[in-house]
Amino acid sequence: MAVYTEVSPAQADTLLARLGLGAQHGLVPISSGIENTNYFVSTDQGEWVLTVFERLSADQLPYYLRLMAHLAAQGLPVPAPRPDADGKLVHTLAGKPAALVERLPGAPVDAPDIHHVALLGTLLARLHQAVADFPLHQPNLRGPAWRAQTGARAQAWLEGGPAELLQAELAFQAALAASPALAALPQGAVHADLFRDNALFDGARGQERLSGVFDFYFAGHDHFAYDLAVVLNDWCIDLDSGALDEARAQALLQAYQAVRPLQGAEQRLLPAMRRAAALRFWLSRLDDWHRPRDAQLLTPKDPAHFERVLRHAVDQPWHP
Image (cartoon, rainbow, N blue to C red; front, side):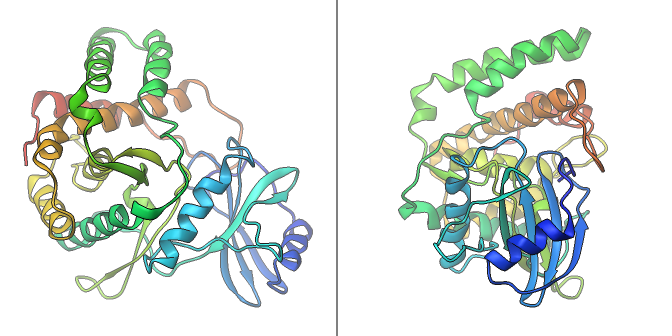
């Protein structure tokens, strides 16, 4: 969440009036992340998060916003988008598409423990069950085709061991993407970016509740095992080495399977899904690093971290 588009208090007031939210009492830019412009907004009727979309078009946004509304209506701790009087969820601000969603209570946890990952595993399984009747369909825009295209471009930025790792992994993932075994796995709308900074916890240490999951703007139709792999690769990873913490991984998976048991094929392909997820985030960070965009408060992330995660996933595959 960087700041590419500066939003003035007057612009925010105009939008808030259109949404029936009364006066604005605070407009604070959010510095974390890299995709969109985000602000915390305080109003007479509560706390909100304003997002101005820098890459996604107005035509693409209904999928993400309706998914959030669908999950919130099912009782999941997901921020519901605020509609206007006509029921529209996509608004316009500074000439760009925008959305306003509820600001949920709590704060992210930088160093998740067994308790946190178990709560997340339960929530992720509930999310995967809740999308069974979600009517919209959109492919994961950072799926196999994107990874192949971005990987081809990224090879010019690497040399030596990293270049060899990327080339080998692109070949492995191309074969996986074409396999009938992968196509047969259960799938549906997935978050696809559920990192530790996209979840909120509230309450005393050791007794927290999972109070919110947000930032669904990379969501898309994909395999549930891939979504699980994305979570494992962040919540259950040693940040210094990139190695998997098996105790956290087992706790997360056990909680997930208590709600939605994995099929045998999903368990067998989970190591390959972890590699796919690590490759996706290595490539996106390489792309952001080597092709930066101008933004205030931009915080690009080090691509070397997911190179380490991928290398560990290749060299030391974890079989649940």
